[in-house]
Amino acid sequence: MGVFVFLPLVLPLTALPIARLAEQHLHPRATTRLLTLLAAVLGLCSTLCLGLLVVVGTAQLHPGRTGGAGRRGGHGRLRRLRAQRSGCAVRRSEGGNAALSAH
Image 1 (cartoon, rainbow, N blue to C red):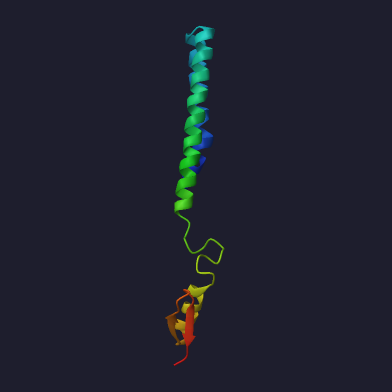
Image 2: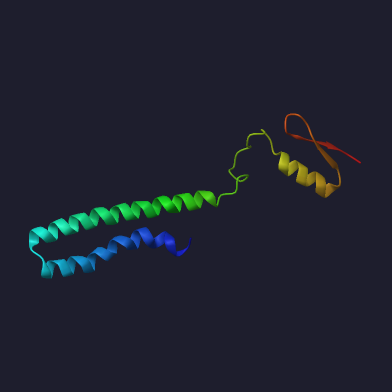
């Protein structure tokens, strides 16, 4: 995703060479219409690129790292991990939270 972040910023810069060529070879009215259409197309392409970056960026988020306690209402995963490291047995209760029991 590194280089593609800059694509929506660089994409509209491609209109500059087209504008210079159109200025030399076309009638001013045709040039204006061409550049207006080109600006609309490049604006849509930039918006599409930004939208795709948002989709890719949100797809890379880890489901358990959103900052909230989640659906279960607690930090059950963290409690189970700590219990496994300390050697305690971990069992799940009906509410989804882990219950600890010592050996």
